[in-house]
Length: 231
Ligand code: OAD
Image (cartoon, rainbow, N blue to C red):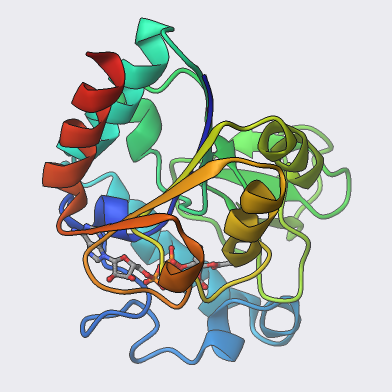
């Protein structure tokens, strides 16, 4: 079976990464337009660097680990009983740490930087600042987080569309269904003839579009679903 899985912040919530729109939502205290737009980075690069430096440091401080949902998805891919395409809106590396062999990070990766001069992408586990130097071109004050900001084009859209066009099953896990284009994938999948399943703590903006919605914690429901798929 061809399976396309889309994950969102909810899959990492039980690992201690705050979701965006929950009560302790990440944007609280930060206006989106102050920290997650190209204009914000033009206006105040240091503030934007500080915001992502904080998130990166937290991801690496040793308290955040993949949870049973990340590990179950890795198991599903590794068993090779199905062809799995894992698409994540998350910029954390918990799918990789959980053992997933390939992840399409459509909103980028917190642990990578990108040079605005030479476009090279590099692993980044340290703080970024205006004094950071690009290892590829030697430029100064040209590195940015390799993440997608509001108003920018997500990554891997062609690969994702191709995978959805041949999907037999589309599964969305822990995403509010509010941010496009990801929120539209379920409709594309349905149009392509796939069955669609949502696993989310509560009803999402897209719940009505899915054939089936399961409500509960990803850490409980995803291993259960993977068990069903591998029986
Ligand atoms: P949201 O914070 O919008 O939604 C998270 C969803 O996960 C909510 O519907 C919660 O009910 C659900 N949830 C919370 N805890 C859960 C758990 N333990 N198990 C299962 N579900 C749980 O996050 P996203 O939908 O990922 O984009 O947000 C999409 C995009 O909006 C992000 O990638 C980010 C943001 O703006 C960019 O930064 C470009």
